[in-house]
Length: 418
Image 1 (tube, rainbow, N blue to C red):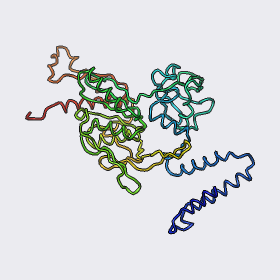
Image 2 (cartoon, rainbow, N blue to C red):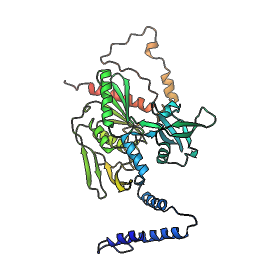
Image 3 (cartoon, rainbow, N blue to C red):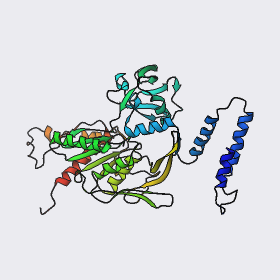
Image 4 (spheres, rainbow, N blue to C red):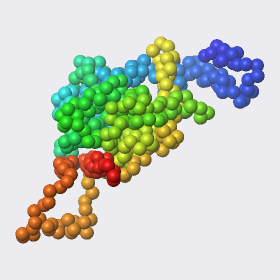
């Protein structure tokens, strides 16, 4: 370490700043601390652990998304990008300070074991999850296919927590799913942005188009999407944005590093879109939301997004180690920074559960309609076909669907004089 300090000092130019202004002289202090630990600490010292811990500590002083990555952690990051890893197949989140299952993935060990949405994971292999971060939870639950893991589950309908032992399998993450909400109206949920996400989206929309004979509107669900690969977010936006900027990245001095623009030949440029967002919509998902909003290509419904507007590059440090370093910030087409501000919805719907009607609304709803009056006239034929009534439990999705059907009708109505 002393040699390292000397080399660093020796490579400084002659016009370098003074000793007190330069951070490099602190390496001498670091080497003295390490020397005291080696010579005087009461127990045998794991020097690799100490040095790597020091690097981790240094990175924690920068920002929450820059990090030093061990070979294992770098492998997990690469697996996320590919959408394939060894695990049990659950989507999790921290709710009320407790690790909670959002949903088990189809045909995975978690689903086969009967794990349900809303279940709480209280411990992993006997270690309580309460102090763990999401990253620590992910590392604990993933592992080699064929290995076992025991998780302690808390469930509202069961009095006492219980243990489940599952065998890890190769998990193939489907980054997008979709179905028809009604004839002509597609619901498309994008869970994450990984290699191939846009191709998955195109396949889903084309399938739904064939099933319904043409789409009148797309409900793009970006809720609880943590982000992922930037290029996939740009490609997805390009499906809908007819022209102009999708996103720019700027470095420390505000200089534009990259500017991504729409090709103008996306397959869904004229299809009405409503996008659902929430506080867990982050990073690459926020890029899509910001582009759709600024380019007037979608109505955003839900709550303000997470606000993770920084760009990280992965730097190879050798020996399997990596450095995830924040190098730029994202900006929407209108030049707005996403960082710590997020993307604001056009229509704020703060809950997935419908609110109870107030007394006045309940009273008005209870008034018998015309159809209940004896001898009432039959309904007159409508000039526009009625859109099928859909019972959607998810309140945000229900409101979004109602708005989408309205936008679809408006866009389908020719202007006066045509």
